[in-house]
Image (cartoon, rainbow, N blue to C red; front, side):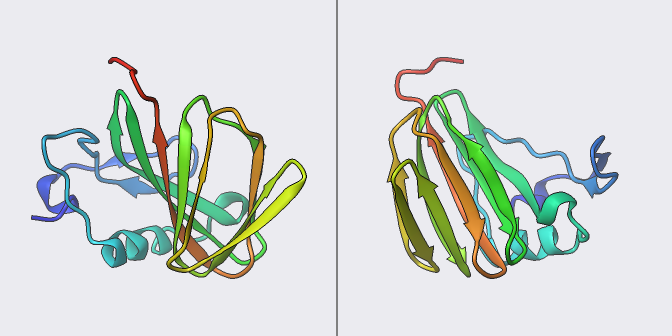
Length: 139
């Protein structure tokens, strides 16, 4: 069963007005079809600031977010309290760190330690998974 097939009610986002199915975020097993989830995000266009995201999983020590970006869109510099993995599913993104920039094309990923300032720019229309881990975190 797909993630979206498990729910039948909808909720309106307060920031964009788009309709979304409420997600369980946590369960003993969550399964997703990346192509399906990406198509759902693209169906919400136009996006504010050229990008949108959907949290797929949210556990006390782990979060997985699918992010879609139009070409040239940017997630301005930020940092997280957990270690992260950025895995490009489609397209090509650039991750800028202090003193270094890494291109991450489709099929590749980078890992960053906690609290490292970084910025993400989409070199072309792209989708990527952001995984954040907080070892030892409790709910």
